[in-house]
Every structure is written in C-alpha cells, then in structure tokens.
Length: 321
Image 1 (cartoon, helix red, strand yellow):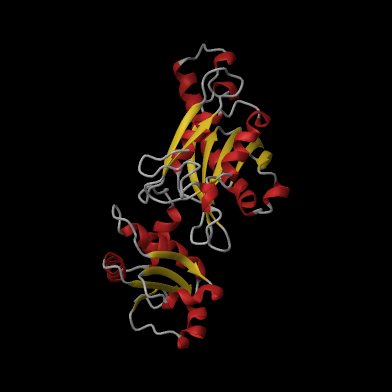
Image 2 (cartoon, one colour; image 1 turned 30 degrees about the vertical axis):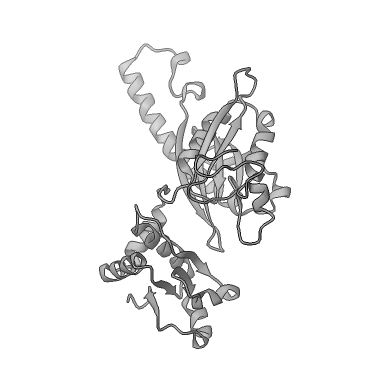
C-alpha cells in the first residue's frame, strides 16, 4: 500500500498495522461482508444466500443478511419488469427471432448495478452495492459510503467466477485495517481468477464528498426540518458551533444529522460527528470543541440537568424549533 500525500508503507506511522497499536486512532475494514444471492423464484420471494464472506458463524452479525433479502427482492422485481418490457419490444421488432436469441433468457441478460442502504437498530448504516440480474446478485456491504470504489471492486472480482476462487481476496478486503482519513490513499492488488494477466490495481482515496443516494436521509429530513431549522443548522455547522439534534423518536435523529452533515458540501465537516449518542457517551455533549451530535430527547432530559447547554445550538425535531 502507498499514498501520494503520506506514504503508507511498513515503516510509516500511518501504516494500518501500526495504527492498530495506537489508542488515539480508530481503524476500520474496507468492507463489512460480501454476498452471493441466488433468486430462485421471484414470485414467492424464494431467495437464498449461496455464499457469504465472512461466514455467518465468523461474522456473528445478522443485521445485513436479515435485511438484505428484502431489498434484493424489491430490486429484482424492478429488474424483472424492465426485462419483460425489453423482451416485448424485442419480439415486436423481431417477430421471427428464435428462442436462442431471446433477450429474456438468463444468458442474454446484462448485469446491472445499484446501491441501497441498510440501517441497523443501533443506527449503524451499511452501504450496499450490487451487481447482477433478476436471477442472481453479487453484493458488497461496507460501513463507509465508497460506492464508486465498490463498483470497481465488483468489476474486478468477476461475478461469473466461483465464490471459492476469490474467497481469499474477499476475506482480505474484509479484514485488512484501513484508516479512513482524508488525503490517505491505499493501493490494492486484485488477482484475475483463472487468468494469467497481471494483477489489477485499485487505488482508494477517502473523501468527505462521496455520498450514496440515500432516500431515507432526504425524505426524513424534509419532513422534520422546516426552512428556518435547516438554515439554523447550516449556519451553525459552517460557523463551527456545537449542534445538538434531539427527538423522542431515535430513528429520526440519525438521518437528520446525516442530512445536516451534507448541507456543508462541498466543504468538509470539521466538527466531531456522532449521529446517535447513547447513555455511555453522553459526556460528549460537554466537549469543549465543536460537534454535530444526535441524541434521544428523553435521555437528554433525564441527564440534561447535569449539563451546561447554554453554548449549544439545539435542533428540536419534535417541537420543530
């Protein structure tokens, strides 16, 4: 691995293995997991996860796999409708075409790409990018919104190959620690299964501006934020003030914080960012530095009498103030 602005080599302080030994740095894996999904019968939602990396026993987290099949079924249904329309158009233009040239057959279908977001009960977001058809999908899940990078990875790994052929590669990108910090760039070498061509190089540079199309963020924020609240939030973040977003409905807090975070684009959010804080981390509210924090209002009311909130901009989603 190497970086243009800051070398990430074995002797560098920023090398992931050295970062693991530090207590002031939080590393993450590039990907959370990979899934090979077979769609047996779309009508009955008969779908199976043919392969999963890491394995379910090793991952010990069913958050993604449980919600994965629902989104796959919805996406596959849309793809099936598009394929049926394409078949009708094809036969209308080629009435004498044989079955071997039927564009509706699985062999004739081209892979599509797409993204969706899963939100766990603890407000952890998983960004998923898929490649496939209405019959099968190859899906990569990450806790970071590296959507364009993930698409390149799916292209390099080749869905047509057997999962067993790339199991070691998938395990590597799920386990190698990286420091998701701006100006750091990592270079990965991906093998080409069953081919003798040179390995493919993938460069990953972490950016604060690459975002995923998350309908949940915009739909929720548009319903709970009025213009004056949105303007106040934007102004406070730009002026690097402490911003606290609260609501009795915790599921509204995370998406609203994410929306406020995106309001400053193309600038970078310099504040500390905690979309949903819990009782164990409530002390962050009294931090002396600027931040953007979301909190359950009931938790804040019970512990708020111990905090000085005079210098904090509070966005109340329930009172809409």
